[in-house]
Length: 129
Image 1 (cartoon, rainbow, N blue to C red):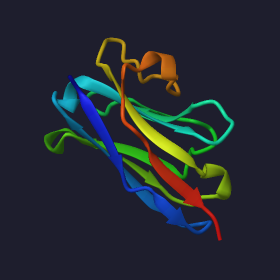
Image 2: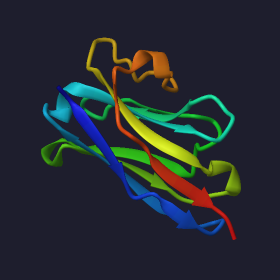
Image 3: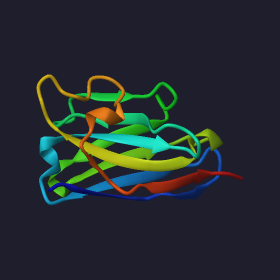
């Protein structure tokens, strides 16, 4: 059973950066496409970014393109979401999720929550001055 744990959230000022980590245990994360999602109060959970098994495919929501970067280190069983240029609109609980790798990769478009099977508990990101 794949288990995911997010970390790295916190309070940051507008324009600042945060680095979120998604650590996997139980199974090798290298066999899974990984997605990052976020959910703000009163809103639906939305896809932010995803990365395919070997990292050849990535996809980003328009709202974060050019500011967020997803990467993976399969040797460390970890996926990273680097978030720069944060704005108050980025405030949300951020979740990582996984789905077994397939061909063609699940991560070809912005991730949809229905596509992913395993979820972490989330980490709060608050952008405020």
